[in-house]
Length: 332
Ligand code: PEP
Ligand code: MN
Figure 1 (cartoon, rainbow, N blue to C red):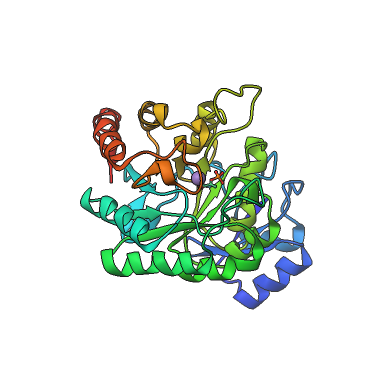
Figure 2: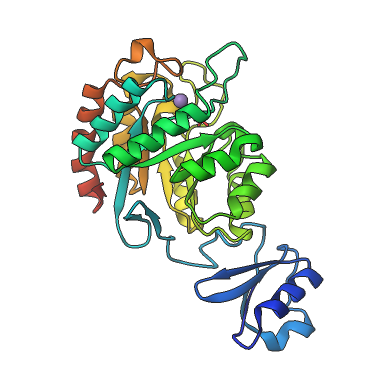
């Protein structure tokens, strides 16, 4: 249950009430709220006079739910807003991994030259083999910071585990929680205490409810800037790397108030269909796309098969612009 407290309740009293009722206490939209488990169905008598409004839920999708807030949350990324009524579809591009200064410099120039604002690049790679390239770590983060400073771009990079979450929070403009880290409580809790956007990827074996509940860990800790990212789930099919769950996207758009970014690169796993999939995604009226592109994919140290060449990335942008316009959105 979510309880919106009236203005007569001081913050210290609200914190005490939260402790007593095993609730989270957050400030949202200018009011204090208590959030309990969805098993609570009635406002406790003691709180009745202190509560202005309350919401009862069937399950623990609460703060993220459209029942709590009908309007999609607005999230600001380096001066650009997505969500709300903006009808912006942010195109985020860059390599799977930050590999060298020269490589990320070329990627940054590509993003800048297209009038885009946000560069991706992984520094802590959650690889499925310990023998594969694991990312440049802090050195990579510093390269991203350099790109922000030199090109005025926002940067997004992922956290692999809780040991370096503070480093990523310090250096990145958007914190990406990867599919394999979606359940990592240390990461989720650390990201719940910050004032930066978090891009939460769906675990490839996670239900939609588990996905949204992972977002609730961040929201209930007080960070209201969560973006969901659908990046493909595992099905019986093996010819494609994963299966992009557009039904899931429709569900999330209908039932949650969180902006949604789609990642067709990781879903398909091969560059040949990324542009077509991107068009399909954009046709759904989405808040953003995450696309992997590399100056020379043939030598990429991770996800070589799916990264677009820069020419292909430029072509993708041109291809999705009219699709976005046809559904009233704009690629930004
Ligand atoms: C990535 O964005 O490079 C990545 C590893 O994605 P995911 O967590 O979706 O596999
Ligand atoms: Mn990748």
